[in-house]
Length: 113
Length: 113
Image 1 (spheres, one colour):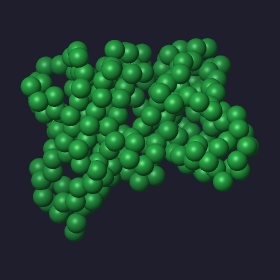
Image 2 (cartoon, chains in turn orange, brown):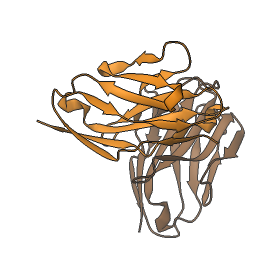
Image 3 (spheres, chains in turn brown, red):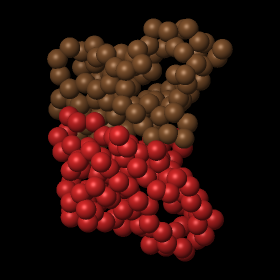
Image 4 (tube, helix red, strand yellow):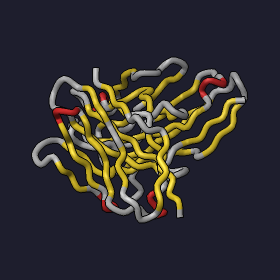
């Protein structure tokens, strides 16, 4: 069975600073990887996804993620954060069927002005 | 474009009461899901439905039942509410391929007293 670990429960960065959120996965086959964002009181919104091909994936809101098979990682990055990026971020790995999607515990991002 | 709509948004129940959470999607998706979100635990799958008329258990199905009588609707029932079922519940839908992302509603915040 697949699993996802997001090592950082809470991260605080200053507005304008760069951001990297970590995600490590465990899955025996080619992973299908997703990053979702959840603003307070809202549902999850897809930021980006990786299935194959270029290991650097571009998403919405200026986010990107890099798939590194050797490290079993799919870290999310943004060069310069905005106050509106404060939210909770979830990494997820897809299994052999659509319903076998497994989410990490989430990383809460706080932005200092 | 409504996407996935959940009702109600908030609900308070007393222990032992029953209720049904409703979910509707207008994207013609075959697959639908119910998750619960608890602090520090990410999202856990309660039940899913791969198509109209079919349902299957997820990771945490005890104390819940579901119904998928119409393609666009997926209902989650609590038979006899318990305080341990206090949570935020999310409905999601997707196409049936594992490379397709799930689309989420805004959630139902449920408190059991």
